[in-house]
Length: 224
Ligand code: ATP
Ligand code: MG
Image (cartoon, rainbow, N blue to C red):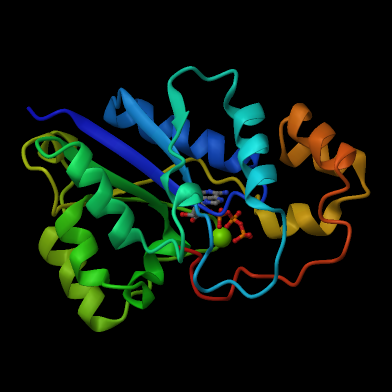
């Protein structure tokens, strides 16, 4: 069995309870020792500017502090230019040439994968672990659907037998939480604390984040 290393990419603007809970379920289900949150530095598809990278990182650190099994991989924040996932996976592969790499993503992100830079290479560089997300059904364009079907497995141990190339769907408990909703409810301390960990809510309030109403982004292309 190869060592398996998972990265969970996202804008995390801000990180919320849904991210942490879904990541915990996937990590436990697959028995992953190395599970990294990977904040995007300069999301290529994103138009509106929300919280600066340093704020998103600070909130990740606060949210993940109680979970020693989760770490933060800062390579996209440190890199100049767009946060292409293929470039990130190339870099991870250089660091860990002999290990299995797992890219963890929610169903909405997976549905948009064919819009990502060099998307066909991505599934050669890592296994894809697709988490269910409320309101999001698998909905792939034909070329992506056939790639996913060809690579699909239900057996978690398969992911440790090769360094990349398989796709596994992992259902997680539905949690209807999105960062978009959080950005829209800043100003309601109670709602905010229901959606993000208390130290993250405190940080948002202290730094006056998300005060200008941000446009909804759920229906736009993926952030990575
Ligand atoms: P936004 O509304 O700004 O897009 P978001 O809540 O979708 O924010 P992202 O940072 O875009 O958060 O998501 C990072 C990853 O986490 C994506 O792969 C996304 O599908 C997944 N994800 C986010 N929220 C959930 C959730 N509640 N359940 C399962 N997966 C989720
Ligand atoms: Mg999103």
